[in-house]
Length: 252
Image: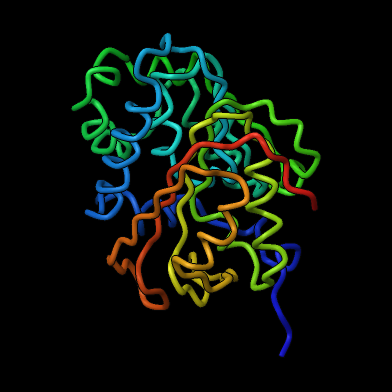
């Protein structure tokens, strides 16, 4: 049986508007729960730290703005790294002077229940500090570790069926973070692939143990939330990993 790899997927045909309509236009309870967990975790991590002092990155941002919004109060600069051209164009619209789509307002409503978020005007702030860059997750292989806060949502597990590409993706993300950097990474549990519009995309099946083993070399402070919410056929829930980057650099 042929294994679908990242390079084989039809990324140039990814439809971000369909993806947003299917997943975020009507907020799902599991996403609101994820946002709440991230909000509280990042608030704890940055307690006593000057606001707007971090350099943040959302790796494989896709057509999902809530990971970036979760980092907004803490960042002086925030990079959205994305490979698929249609998603890059979508993200550039979201950070334009016109402001981001109202679909993201319910996620901000959850975030601003915490004081650090309530103190931020999100649309002007997004336009001020966020930039979009087209790039592959694997471009982070060198591990120059410039970022002090990072997110990676449904990326390493949702781009390939190959186990080595999943583990390489996690390693690239973690090696892009500096020592002590808080991070949040989300995974579809036991996903067999997914469809966006007329096109199918690959996935590597992961569970809590897979995710834990992939992340443990990079952090001594890891919590994994097994969220038993299915949002479509072909998976068994979501996993949210929260932690801080340790000082070790894992080799390729």
